Length: 218
Image (cartoon, rainbow, N blue to C red):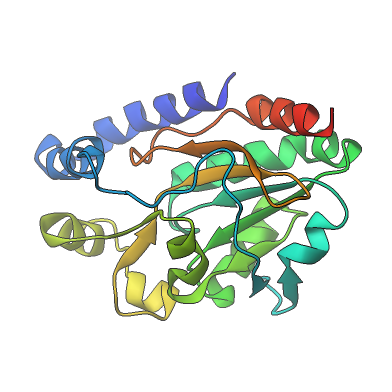
């Protein structure tokens, strides 16, 4: 089963559990409001050079992008947080192709604004064997041009209905989130694959990522 089919099936299940009047403003926000022209003018694209950064992993150990690129291509997966089941499915799917990525000489890291205290249980629960990094305040995600604020009715629903308390999870009162996005980066820091879709239910297929790494190595 493809990752997208898995995500679609899960959303179909959500629709049987959550009232339509609750889901409607959430879906409108992600499928329409965030899709408006010019909403993300600075998102990095294929051919752009990525900024170098150092972020802590779930155990508090620093991970430097420069060190990873010195060994080969890097796959960066920005996700919203461990509270997002769609993100968890995507991370599981990336874990499944990790041996293929490593065989191609590539590294895989996931990045969210979530504090290590909240990302560590995710790593342990899902058995993730790649670094899961904390981007406090979405500092790195802003450099990639993928940050947006959770606002108004959607913020209220997220907190009151789904118990998504971003200030507690992220240690940041801003209620900002990254759009889930995946970048394949060559050792020269140039982007070879850029998948970016404000509709959080849409994610890149893992085999597309593997092929992009293979093309980068070729």
